[in-house]
Image (tube, rainbow, N blue to C red; front, side):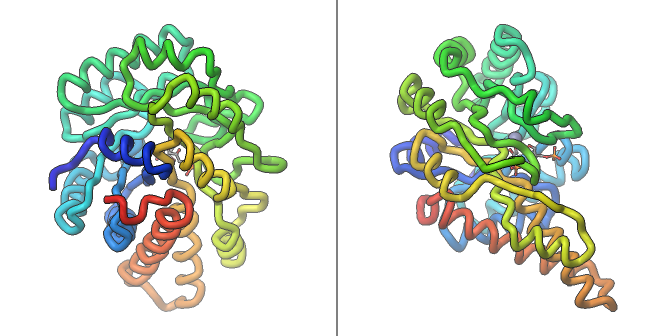
Length: 309
Ligand code: G3H
Ligand code: 13P
Ligand code: ZN
């Protein structure tokens, strides 16, 4: 099966009240851990690549890893650019074989966001590629940019119809209180489901995307701290909130930090317990298993997309 776009996946997810996991990939072990879990659970999948990942692993390596994953799994997999911040990077990914791109104009004034997003949509649609836009601004760290909780801006439901209509985007990322990274809430976790509901009412049937949706499992935070790390106060989005969002209009849930935590905790533990180890296959193999387990957990308990491939 070739790489697919997200069109069919989102349609089924919307109707079925579940969401597709969009997992960030940076190297072979991450691609393998995610795709092995999806294969075993027969789940559709979005693999996403940030500008940072593209710089780290290089476009061609990531492309070939994803091609290998498709060959191994025969699953519907979309390859997506995460947080494209310019027409140029979106164009490079479209020309280079991605089936989906995000143009993130969320930091721009409304009219400029529309203009940039529409430019990407026109180029992408002519080539059979789908586009995710964003309205509202998440807090957290992303590609070295740190947005504080105070500077985050919830998506304004009054703007969504005009944005979608004038840009022609295929999905819309919104800000309802999630944020990037492992430190999401200072106090009690809170998501603005009232905003999500209103957006769903104004855009019936239209797929919504939730960024910053890691849950920050405390067992991994504790493991990191036990084996020499320092992550006091790390806090994520409770899984029942994500499950609720997935049953509503949210069709794509972005998860990166949880994979980083699982991988880092596992490598720290492995090295502490095996001080003589120096074969990377041992600790990276253990990390790959940890990724597989957490992705399987997300697919079944958070996204609800098991057996939907
Ligand atoms: O939202 C951002 C993703 O977690 C990607 O992070 O830019 O460090 O690769 P990155
Ligand atoms: P997390 O940092 O919560 O994993 O969010 C990832 C993300 O939104 C990627 O675009
Ligand atoms: Zn994001």
